[in-house]
Image (cartoon, rainbow over all chains, first blue to last red; front, top):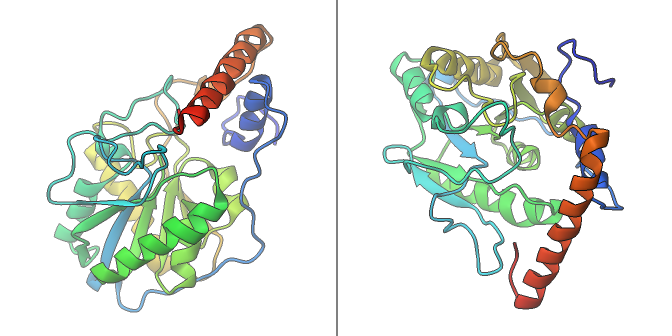
Length: 163
Length: 122
């Protein structure tokens, strides 16, 4: 995709490759790629479904990080979310900010959809999924842990909002 | 995040990814993608605009019922604020940046090496 100022989406993979090469890295990051895509259908009408929110943000006390600073799955309560979040991942610090949680974790917006009957319920817990360099860690550790927690919460579907 | 969505879906939980990095999400390939053409960081709407945030959430959850096949992408019908340069600026490497970036990369690798010796990460 060419980089023109004509409203085409930003070519993030290309930009990131150039950026890290400029930093002196010799090996390009390899983004996950698949030809097949799994597909599950809602088992009940949307207006009767319980939806969970999944975020890439972390808790403000960094309690999702271990001694080696590796991030792990964490959870919070939609009734009492942290006042601030750890948003130390790649986002556009020049164009915007993350001072409004609803721009990346729309708890209040989803509550409005419950109130007007669009969805049945918002799951009481939201969950934090680390963004990790390692596809293996995401596939073998974090994604199964998110699945386990969603099953515990008995949700019908999930909205994954990526910073 | 896309890998998590795929794992949930493969285990029977329908998902929608809401995001702004269209090329990365579609390269990974997910069942349903609500795309917001905004700078990274605010895929769920402009800051402090509750009406837009609610509309984007509504738009995203609608995909749970509306999508009939995987790889369904729906673009939110909103533009970023009047700032025509944001797409062009993000992580752009200009010739005058090269020396500074290379020095930053050297410093970054050195920090990581030291952290690794200390048993931690930076």
